[in-house]
Amino acid sequence: MKVNIRKSTPDDAIRIDQLATQFASYLKSLGDLTDFKFNADTYLRDGFGADPAFSGLVAEFDGQVIAYLLYHFGYDTDRAIRLMYVVDLFVQEEMRRQGCGTALMEAAARIGKKSGAVELIWFVYSPNKLAAGFYQGLGAHYLEDLRFMVWRPL
Image (tube, rainbow, N blue to C red):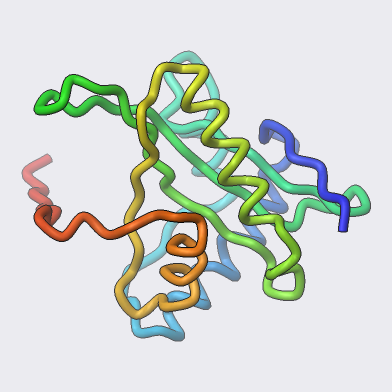
């Protein structure tokens, strides 16, 4: 299967919304209780403009967007390195195991490297064994000694 990987654009908002809705449904089926709010409007509001919160890539097959990956950059002061955070990767269910996810991750890695990032980092919802297996197949591993925390005073 020949997929085309390209930078996401505002024109992709509706399709990314549809895929994000499928992603949220999948995660909910695994027990995720998150009140998912990402949609076409938030994609446009937060992904574009003077100070975008993230950038994205899409995979197309026969002119149809079948997958997306969203990312942003960060920094690790302990190791004094730039990081690239993958915040979402989703492949339409019928198109999985065709190389789309791998192609998106490889494209993200090239962007990260070009921007000076040393590694990619992301979260995996614990019950999402399908995703964990995919990422481990790429050579990724869990960071066993770190536990993320959240504080919502804002």
